[in-house]
Each structure stands twice: as C-alpha cells, then as structure tokens.
Image 1 (cartoon, rainbow, N blue to C red):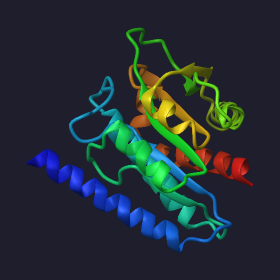
Image 2: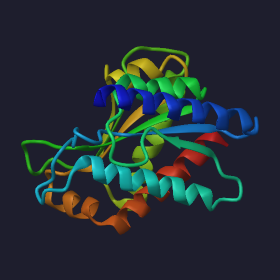
Image 3: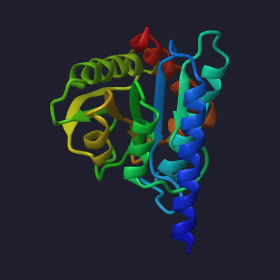
Image 4: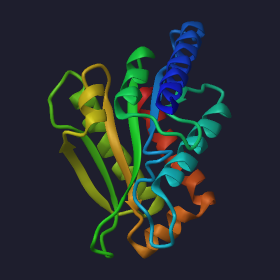
Length: 212
C-alpha cells in the first residue's frame, strides 16, 4: 500500500510540473537537478555519520534559492525537495516530461582509501547528440570547483549509470560527485551547511554560463 501511495504521489508531482512547464516562457532554460538518493536510500555515510542524501539536498535547495534571487533566473526543478525516495526511472521520467534542457545528478563519493579526494564528473558512455555539450559542461564544472573552492579534479569519466543512460538521449546529462565523505577534510567541508551554499553558487554560475 505504501509503495502505491508513493507512486501516486510522484504522478501528481509530475502532473504539477507539466502544468507549471506549460505556463513558463519559451526563452527560459529548463534545468532538472537530480538530488541523489533520499528516504530509505541514504547513499554514502561520512566518517562523522553524515549522509550523502542530506548533503546533496542542502546543495540542491541552495541552488534553487540562489536562482530565485537572480533577475534572469532559470527554470529549475528538483527530483525531490525533501527526504523522500524517488526511483531512478522516475527521476529521468520527470526530466523527459518537462522537456529539460539539462539534467544534473548530484552525489557524494566514498572510498576505502581515506586519502581519496576530489571532484568527479560522469557522462554517459553511450554517444548521443547531447554528448558534446555534456562533456563540455562536465569539464567546466571540474574547473570551477578547482578554481573557486580548491577541490582537486579527478577528471571527466564515462559510465553506464541508469540516470545518465536514460536521460542522455533527450538532453545533456551528467552526474557530479561533490567530494569524498570518507576523506576527513572533504567530509568536514561538506558537513558544514554554509559550505553547501558556496557549492551551490559554483554550480549555478557554471550552469548559467553554459545555457547563455
């Protein structure tokens, strides 16, 4: 029964988004920020117990709030706005229904090696008409994190992640690993809510440069 209710809730959200989309202006770029994990899926757990699902939600909400303050703001939608579980297929269905111009999935990394650190960006390993734009933005985000925040760049990589595989065919899509929760320095940085806003600023500014 609970599963059924969750599915119904997502359908209602999808319909609301489509209605909002119908009211939007044609000039605005439509961005879907996929907020990784959520609900029963905590994602990676940091060395201080912080959960990946909470870190990426703080960053995503920061992007949303900062965007609302811009005079020429983007149309930005999140795949979740609170601690709820959304299936991988429903995340990409939302982007497709909204006819998104860009899909960015936010995550945090974890490794057995406590010295592993830095930002990674992934794009689909299946070539499409959107591959070039996705790769370009992935490199720009890597550079921005390095220049503005001092994060090491671990490079742009290709993967067969479901959200990338399903979204890449209809819009540029990438998955961003914001740092390692298993690294003491990056865990401490990502655990600070104030830093979430700084990360959000870097991501939003880079996306704005991409869509202009």
